Length: 430
Image (cartoon, rainbow, N blue to C red):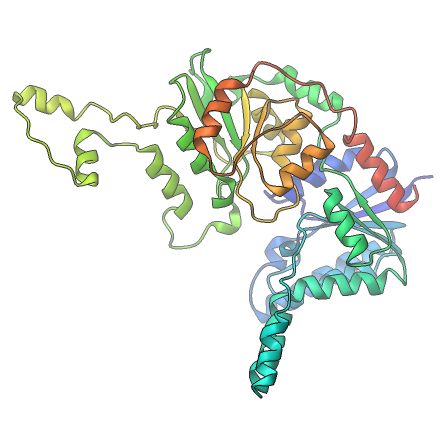
């Protein structure tokens, strides 16, 4: 008889954690009787005293369901539990205490800034007691999530079977060595089984996406994926595109994150930034005006009028396509249709990437910036990622030309959906 596994996660939301849970749920059902407990983001992330109380009531409702489970997995992205740090810690502890056996899958690894002991003792030596106490208070506030969650795990692992699952060997070593967690497992994100990958490849056609219809068959698609934000480095991809032949097009498969949509803001600031790089509606005259240039001309009226229709060299509006936010079902298809899966991310301390994992499972040609998370991922899948230096659009452009976008690697033999299942089985004795 299968153990009943309760999964606590966002589910009916357009977010990466919900997408991951929907992919691993059918795989986990091979070994467990699975029930998903959806973290209602409208309730849990609404500000205000009344909303906070309703959020706690929602967590209490989930806890009652968890008590009926043999084991529980919490897909943890801290912000899905609330807005305030104290709310996040309190609600996570409620979920853990309601579980007989629990694993926490960390999708973000919190870091702690080191305490400035030199500054602290200088304040004490100068009899600035108030300033020294203020430094302690500031440290605790800035590192509240890190300190409180790790302390709670160390405390609760003595009372119940508690496992931590992370996505890199580095993070596993940190949690074992420095945080003294007893049971730590590591495995890269995994979304697709081999049969699911084959099904996606079989049905992938450009006509499925309106922005790709009508593109010449000779056009090479360089795809970027996921929510559009500063750290995703879409601007780097656009700068690289200006150094590529005209048959290379950039397709942005993603939209602005729902949490970044603000009332009264007509356009997302980062979207505005990348639009200015694409340079739509610019010609010779607008370029001169923006650059503060001047020029003397001797032209007929007809020739002068014709200059308005001459695009400047770096106008990329015909070669950059916005596909919009995608459903989970369309995401893998978008990656399959790309000749190059491009991840030009900036280093922000993230632990994993859904697009990277799916592109790897699809056997795509992957170009990625050399961030710590991607270097850790490549250690699991050696030779399947080509790196460029973060922000170096010229190096990126030359690599796009150098790689063979028609080649497709086989499904990874190690660290795939089945080995990911084994991790959860080991964590819960199934």
